[in-house]
Image (cartoon, rainbow, N blue to C red; front, side, top):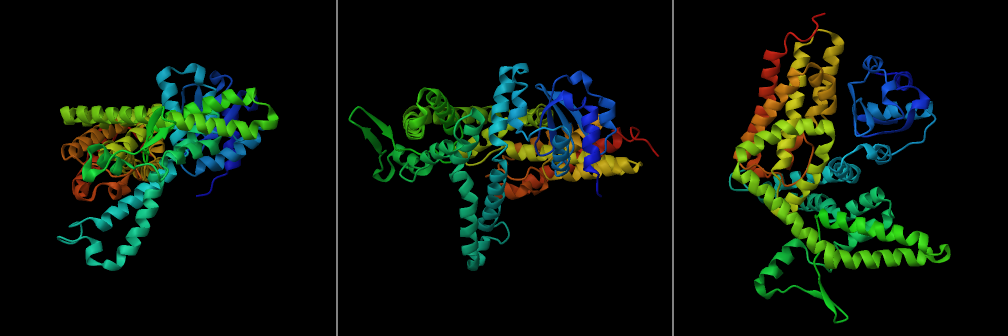
Length: 476
């Protein structure tokens, strides 16, 4: 179905108060994010009447309009042209609302700003790693054998996929360094260099570090002996999040302090060298070890809490994750997932996130079957499909929250599904598409129980919505 995006953009601009009320505009995967001078000038009813708009709300000083994946980019371009604005990043628009945010919201915003640009690389790596695990899993398809054992010709394919899958995770600090440097206002190239420094081949990876620390096979920790004054462990931070985040923040502070103090004639020579040397030494000697132990402590504490009360923890997380999406706080879990994968070999959080997305899609699908009006059916069907592939905002804002009971049904279904897989200790070896394709990223031996959780996430919200929300839709 084709849409007049120029007309839609014009109606949105008029509804938010016109050109003089719009300061900046950006968009993420599903939402327009607008910085407005005066939000009281927004005509909420006029926005609800605009084609494609599935919901709108204000959070942290940023007015957000939910449109959906793909369409949001096609609306954004004519919108900024009509408003005579330059393209802006989500971070730039969010910065306009910083003064209205609390400390926790600002912390969440940092994680969101850093991880959203690199999320496609992480998801692609997760999907490839899932395929790789399926090929190498014994007994998954053939009793007592993996597909590699049964078909040796697949070995080259497996090796190629394995290399592609590991690239994003091995060099994750470089990706985070680039994105974090951009967020903190430093040189993005220096952020990449600092990230690559932390995964240099001369530094021990986690596996070899564990062997050396335990003294296995006569291994010992190697050190940099710095002029006989102090020693720095030759330890890398492959797949780690906190060390590079903290190190990049320090790097940007050093660089931004140097820029106004170094003459322009020698800036290119002095600033990069001093910035990398100072931040690199601090990263390897202080920041890295402290952040690594902090990351281990955080993940151990999280695992302890879930082991202490797995049923309660899972049901609470399953019920609260979708509301966290509404606030934007869900972006924090990307870092937690990656830390769990690095320290524990898998994450139990991401599978629950995937089931929450499926539950929202299932509730929207039930509303599709209940609807009589063609526009309601169209909204529900497209939103459900989007949620089944990991993008839940259209389903939540366009359908489930609009009628309330489907949203509550989805929360109940998500909680039940999360409890089902948590009691079976289901974990993911990587982050993938948070919807129906999620099983690819689950540890192969645990896929059957994850599929049971998927059935719960599909059936429970659908059934509850069918029972509770039948009388909420117009029948014409």
